[in-house]
Image 1 (cartoon, rainbow over the protein chains, first blue to last red):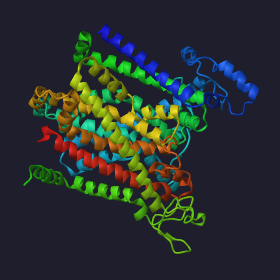
Image 2 (spheres, rainbow over the protein chains, first blue to last red; image 1 turned 120 degrees about the vertical axis):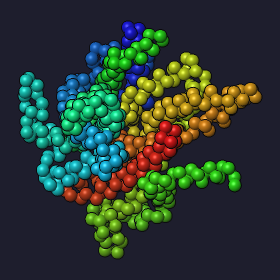
Image 3 (tube, rainbow over the protein chains, first blue to last red; image 1 turned 135 degrees about the vertical axis):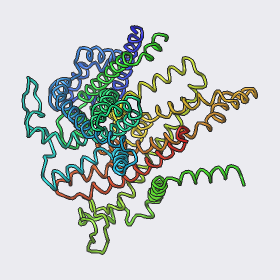
Image 4 (spheres, chains in turn blue, purple; image 1 turned 120 degrees about the horizontal axis):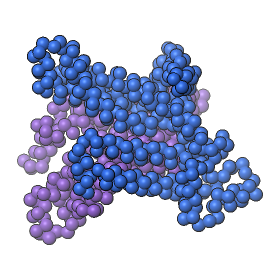
Length: 325
Length: 292
């Protein structure tokens, strides 16, 4: 067990190292680092000063070493546009992204679980076929385009909900979030629904498959033979048992919501990390790009590490295999 | 009758048993035809500056200009006919998607089959890399590559190949592992054929069925991903107007109610991706022995 965690930890560090190399090579060697890392409005003397300061006149290996050391210290450079440390900018935007991702996770579960149970419970009914066809459509629809349609219908034509930005921020139990005000909720609803769409499709499929398996189990037959109402069988016995795999999978896939929020945030002008990176790419704000990539890669590497460790607790087979290796 | 031909006819009959998949397949063929022959079937050349007039910009669907040109789906901000722009866009989108899919298939099956064939440390290394890569969402992998190296046609294709190869490698390895224990591989080894010949002439053809299934579904995914990246302004440059770029161009007119500029390219994208997905889904069911 300990050996397994140590191997995985070492592997995570290696992945992080390779990714930092990739980002470093991409930014510093493929393009012209002077042009990319120095404010284009700087004059010649300024350019030379910064080249010396950034160590661009030194050998490449030494430069990479300094990049790593500084990154480790949390110094990933300052944004050209905002003039603030890149790391600080990203951390400022993080709550908006997390808020969006959490709310869309909530929406996807609220919508998908009942539909999935229905489709699994009545697999041959017309409505189930419509639900399943809808889930294939949900897989095929490009997220950003659906977002545009949402804006067109709900914001431009009907004028029900605002289409851009984050709403008023409220405080509840010491947490600042726009989820605590009505205005904030009206702003978060469309982007969160848009981000949830893909998840809704996959959770419907997962729930349906789980339900179909569970209703054949002996304990369901037993519950029915005890004379428990069908409603109670579904709501208590089926629901409880399918929740375990769903919560595991959905919880572990939370990272993909953060990654896909880049698209949704751009469409809905949601001021999160995803919009920041896209804006920075437009503005060639290299320090922010590098900082974002390093942060998101670190986030994913450690998320995966935690997932691996949780799995060893949940599934003993992984643990045994790991100890033998 | 030639046994190969008979097998093919049987396959066609089997495939047509699902009407939805059959219709999806014909729709895909039609889209493919339009994409390949876009210059011939388009009403106008949307990128010929002599025929495009800014006077016609943002005409709604079913409108006509002063010289009698008819615009079935309206025009975009530069006065281009949307039908023609979509046809040319399909060409770019499908081209990038299919090209990257083919390269990813070649690279992925090479590593997958060789991993299964040689085993040992080489296999662990390859599969470890595959596992690590699959633990990152595809859009993130593409975003990292395009953000670090900049946008462009070849960079987008490289990003899409890197996103996809791992799926092919995993599929190729798992089916190659089954094939390697079969007698024909032993027979080929007894004949002292080279490793390369056994891997790619004997094992590969027998792994094709699952690879084709993954290939169709992955191509749909690649087309959709390319559209997303191009919409974000990270993928293809403006000189290669794919469907994603067309949708992105129309996005700015959305708030003034000119819906057709970004809606119709999106519909074209949706139909393309959905038809490929439906065909792929049915192929997967057909090749899945558990369902027979």
